[in-house]
Image 1 (cartoon, rainbow, N blue to C red):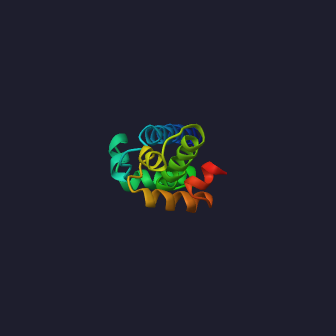
Image 2 (image 1 turned 90 degrees about the vertical axis):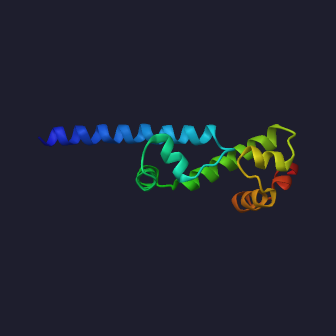
Image 3 (image 1 turned 120 degrees about the vertical axis):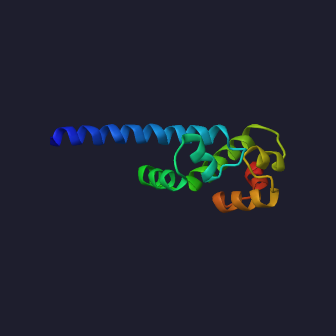
Length: 119
């Protein structure tokens, strides 16, 4: 009986990690869109609170932290490899308010997007 409980627990963890990967992939493909918890939870057919708890428990990071990190990593890539204007980079990664994009970028990297690009 103990073996069965362990195997079902492992299967639950596998299903959970598959779900987490699906959530991360969906986020990565929709960085420029509204990424509210409600929207993401709707995509995977889970209650937002349950998804949030499960995600944090599995990864040690909140969904919003993952979204910001992914957006910033994508912004860095665009700043390094394209000639897009700062506001265009911001819009591409989901920040329609350029000053807010600059603020978040500076908080994350200690530099403005322009300083990062020039450095």
